[in-house]
Image 1 (cartoon, rainbow, N blue to C red):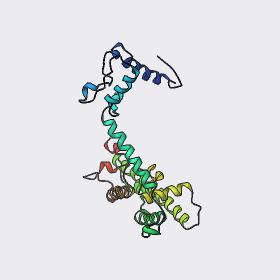
Image 2: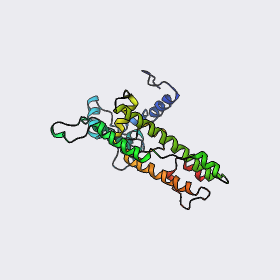
Image 3: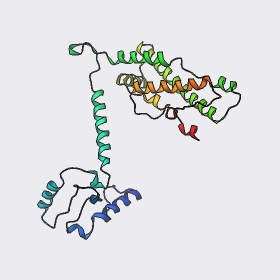
Image 4: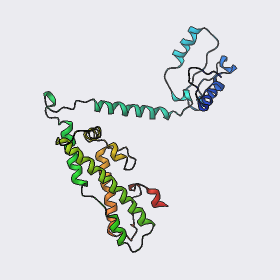
Length: 257
């Protein structure tokens, strides 16, 4: 076991280092052994150690035999590369979107709207759709003859939606004042504007909502559908709906248990 340069700083690092050492540091290394763990399970993927030779020949063997990087070399499933490259591609395209010119007017982009104009339009649409959405949970609880587990679940969902709607309305009103010059644009307001412009879920909203990888426009449609389900249940709260959209609940496990 070799410890150097601070690379091994805890027991997990030591376990990883020893695992690699146990696999590679053996006599078979000098007898053309397979260097990729579990390579026998993957057809066409292999890297054999060369017979004892010169340093230059070792380098030549690596250049010729190791044609491309593969997760199999690290004992990982081939799908690990798919996930890695997908994530890298998403980051690259998101960065390209963020680097696009954001000033409207001039040249060939004379018809392009500025980020603020796009954000203002999105802000107006969202406020029109959700500004008046609010569930009176306390009044509903008082009106119930009997409050069972299903009623508790739906009322908890309503409370979550009330918090989310309140944050959406509060942040959008604040951004409106910022656009009007009545408030200084803060970092959170800038982030909200960028999210509206890039069609992304604002971080402050996602913290109070359910996990989602949707774009903002699709997320808002999904949000609206969730509200509709709760509104329909609120019309007849003592009766369990014949059909319930389980994935439309923030905490579906509470409904199932």
